[in-house]
Length: 339
Ligand SMILES: Nc1ncnc2c1ncn2[C@@H]1O[C@H](COP(=O)(O)OP(=O)(O)OP(=O)(O)O)[C@@H](O)[C@H]1O
Ligand SMILES: [Mg+2]
Image 1 (tube, rainbow, N blue to C red):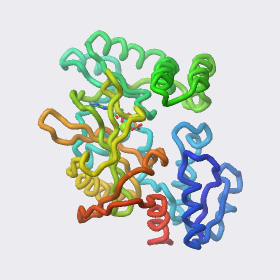
Image 2 (image 1 turned 180 degrees about the vertical axis):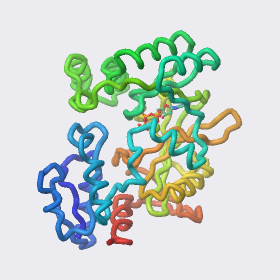
Image 3 (image 1 turned 180 degrees about the horizontal axis):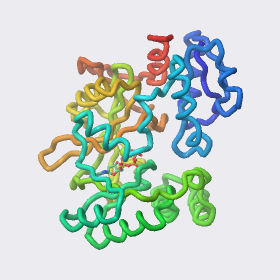
């Protein structure tokens, strides 16, 4: 019996898991992972599946500890440790991807002001600055000069950065509203959050005492996201915003097979095997020699965006055109070596 965390939200995987179980007569039980007796609730279950979210103020407090405790006790979980310990943590990913020898865009992290300033004196600009967490390009900025980098260093080793960029979010909501991609209420919400930030940002506190920079790979009109689950891969091309280098969160997507560089697909299969992970989304941009470079990874993704995908690849790189159900793949994977 699979346990599924009961979350009625449309943005997470749960309702699609439930739908797949219903249609295929797979026994499942809905549980509430926030309940104090969750371990008791899971008695008799062989697995727990929970699409926890980086912007959920409860999830960020206890989702990983619960899932890893269950995994350590022998229960099958989704996402498991290898898949998710580095989720929403670009600092962790730098070490993991370097250690595994993946083709990551050159990335630097410093933990004291003088190391960071020394590096700034010796390097060239522009560079990309990021916080370790956040999605939709929210905490990703282009640093065009040494002086801007220095002021970021002062802030990083001073009061730090809020996990939620309130002004950046207002600007992004206005951009989307102008393009007809969101409504006026969403813009209003952005203004309210200037004075009342989302609860998850309060829970996380300020990002402080580290600074993260990445080599800037210019002239990319998009990024390429490849998602690998159980030996199958599908892809999304995200176009950059107008007058911006950032693709994630733009809301402008391409799905046709022809727009993808299949080197990204085979790299992603290889990387997933090496990570021994259940589900990984890889974001790639291209360097000056047109070689794909990895920007970051994530186990979670926004389900609806991938519904129009036009097909998937298997590990032999065969293309299977047409609709498919990656949420079903997750269930199949969990059932496969079910303990
Ligand atoms: N080093 C880089 N060089 C060029 N462009 C980059 C680089 N890093 C990121 N980008 C662009 O900025 C966007 C956001 O970066 P990144 O994926 O690291 O942030 P994110 O907010 O975590 O995104 P996601 O929503 O995919 O989790 C990418 O989609 C890509 O278009
Ligand atoms: Mg990304």
